[in-house]
Image 1 (tube, rainbow, N blue to C red):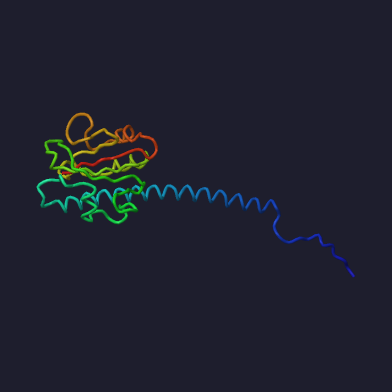
Image 2 (tube, rainbow, N blue to C red; image 1 turned 180 degrees about the horizontal axis):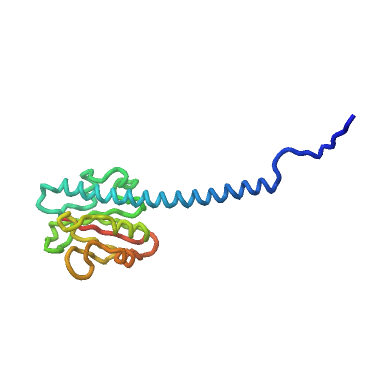
Length: 191
């Protein structure tokens, strides 16, 4: 009769398990980084869509009015112009995908348009990358698109000749989207 020693073990060694855990860790880090980039891109796209929709809806509602003097955040909300994802939890204000405020106001006089002929939409609380991407989006190729000015952190850009003209350049966006994290704002002025 032969005797067998119980020296054969089944299962995985500690080195093999550590190798598997290392691979899982590397894949997780890559997945989290990819997810973060995808979420940032999603938020920017959502902000672009919101701003465009808000502008079109305001212009549509005020089409038969003689001025935009009543184009305020409160009136826009009361008229049901913003989509549901723009309203804050209390329903008395608007927020963008970056949790910054969205405000609507009558505009000021610019490029030959009287103050009552324009309105503004402001997105606050944007991080630097979002500010740059949103500022560089195609907002129209001339003043005929309805866009009169874009203001980034207090610096206005308008159609025409000279300094600070539209369309914005990459350098304009990089220079002006420089506020602290989530401290950038963009204002669009439309007629």
